[in-house]
Structure formats: structure tokens, C-alpha cells
Length: 126
Image (cartoon, rainbow, N blue to C red):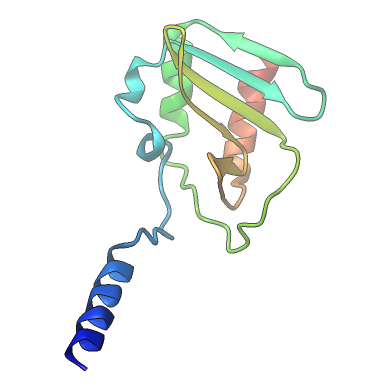
């Protein structure tokens, strides 16, 4: 009986330590390092597959600043999806540090924020 209780206690403790982050996050929360060091950015249009590259550090930093308050809110449905509207890749030098789409970061899906789509669209069309 004591062994069973101890095992149950360990399982409860372990499940409490598991990551269950369902709170909103900002883009910098996903970025390993200082997002201010991004010096190259690529945007791909998922509909046309057109790709644009940005090397102007001021333009990149201004754009990142403009989206810093946008929250990435986890979608309740985390099932796999196909396609994307835009994909953004952030680089430091030649090293890709983060990529995301308008509805995902890594393998986690988020509610699409129209402000993010608009910010990406404005930069893409420049």
C-alpha cells in the first residue's frame, strides 16, 4: 500500500511539472537570444511561393518593434494543418534563429491575429 501511494505521489508530481503552457506569448518569447540581433529576414507567401529577403537592419528592427505587442494565443485545436498564408524566417548572420507562420511557431498552432497578417503583408508589399 505504501509503494502504491508513493508511486501515485510521484506520478502526480511529474504531471504537475509537465509543460502545459496555454497562455499567450509574444514573438520574443519564442526567440532564443536577443531578437534585436536579427539582421536578415525572409518572408514567403504561401499562396504564390514568392519569397522576399530583407537586409536593412533598421527596417527589420522597426518591423519587429511594430509586432512586439501581438499575442500568440494557442489554438484549442492543435491538429496538423497544411499550408500557410505567410512564413517568416529570422536570421542572425547566416544562422536561422526562428521561423513562424501566421498561425504557427514550431509545431504549435495559434489563433491567427489579423494584425500580424497585415504587418507581414505591408512589409511583403514594400
